[in-house]
Image (tube, one colour):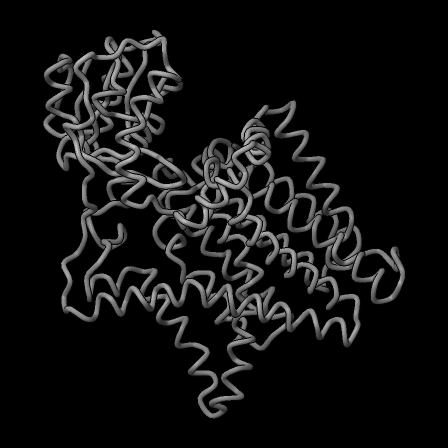
Length: 496
């Protein structure tokens, strides 16, 4: 993607800064303009303080604080998408200038991130169709006049540029094809059930099932590998995630309850607000409000589809798709909360509306966990699951470079777990033949094992399983018994 290649290179040459400075400082600054653009878009339909609060809802999310700082491609893609939304919704720039600016933003979106582009096509094309159906039923006319908010050239440009870029230009549409095949598989009902039962996390029963099943799967799916006959997963066990000690017996359960309440509040209030806005657009017909209603309705339908369509979680992170859909849902949610507060507590309606946002900010930023205990957040701690996932140590980079040089161009298999593999992707050119399940039953003879600091120091390893992540004991004793230590610096190592 050009958001990781040409754009950083251009910024380094123009601003005379290092590539590291671009990703750690410049990109987050650019990403910070996304809620600003959303504020101006919301301002077209609401008062200033409501628009400000709705933009704050987009910020006060766990993934915005904890993971988007590491998602450079999607940072830039969201910036282009938010700018495109504002260009489509505003009234000042019209005619050919609006078309040219819109096409340029669409091109930037497409070359920045594929899944954000797919989501944008679904949202805008679906909203265009819903608006036409709205016109057909409400006014009994299929083609009343050219669409104002969602013109046809927008969908056409998105589709054509995406086909050209993801097809003959880069051949990067494989994931979408795999997703379609998975969605149409015979496991449809089973996948839907697992999606609702897991809620994005791997339950303990499934974690234990992973250790019992993964060896059989490898022997069946990877028969070309030579496994150790004495390998047994009974020697390792599921590991507990690190956490901050509870400060008080009752505060931690209350914070979990508040977190769960707020997670559902935005979507439930947003759904109710969207239905209310759609009803008003139907009752008081206007082309602009009708198309806006179609847009937010499509965002709501997309949110439901994200959580129902099987296979989505296997090929892309669902909360990131939720974050894009939240751009459309946060404003209706705040408007509905304000309307309800006016009915119940008219004198304190603004305070009641803003309080959930403040609570969500405390939770998403990790400040509440620091105060009452719970999951450590990477932006405030140098330990915890998120820190283990994404923080790359220099010792890991050194081991990765050593492995790259020793392996050379030979196509030998490397074992590196789900997140340690990122240490190979970022600083080296190692690509392919990397297995991410490190257990005694899955390890093969004559293969490399790359161990990061989480494996060596913390003694745990992680693997993806059933739309979640399994954390279990790193089989260091088994590896050191059956393989030679080729490289170690005390924190990371390479075995073979």
